[in-house]
Amino acid sequence: VSVGNLPPNCEVVIKITYVVELAIENGDIVFRLPAKVASWQSKMAIEDRNQV
Image 1 (cartoon, one colour):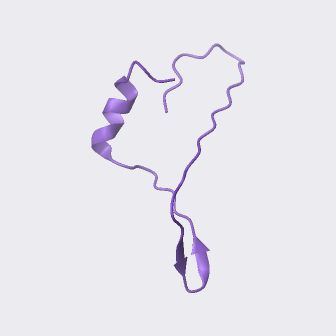
Image 2: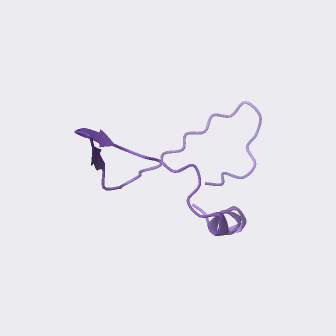
């Protein structure tokens, strides 16, 4: 996610919807959110000029 330049003291709300199949381990429902999905995509995402 890239939000660009923000003026001082502004408030920004970023909403991300994450859809994934949950795992069951030892009777518990487990949700894992990876800190980094794919390093080769990170640079592309930052440089993408068409983000909404």
